[in-house]
Length: 137
Ligand SMILES: [Zn+2]
Image (cartoon, rainbow, N blue to C red; front, top):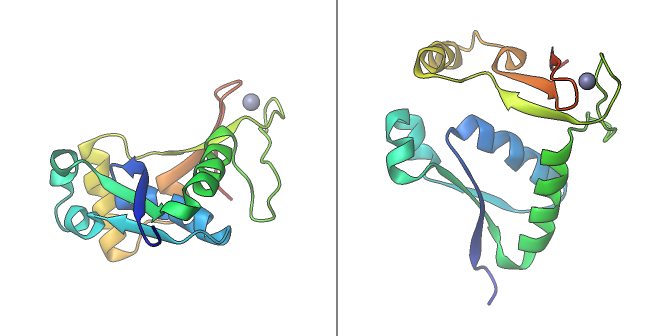
């Protein structure tokens, strides 16, 4: 069945989904986000409607999941090199959102709307080995 969609991941906020979408698209995967417009309009409903669904074509599902796993196990820089921790130099580095609660999300939203918030204040890298957090360059 061509053009059947499969949901491979769910995100609370569109921005997180957009990062993964960008990475998958760089690998040639067609990505569709559902409910992102609704959640952008009213972020409070995200939990109620089950978050932003990241969907791919069924025939690309296995490939997309493989990429998703490689993303979540470690982060790569723009050249595809594994990012190493500045402290322990291991490659167990993950991206995490600094948007942790509603208060910082509100601040994020204001910054997002007015375009004053740079990317690196919203997301950081964290080393899973030694828990060192460091900014995205
Ligand atoms: Zn480390």
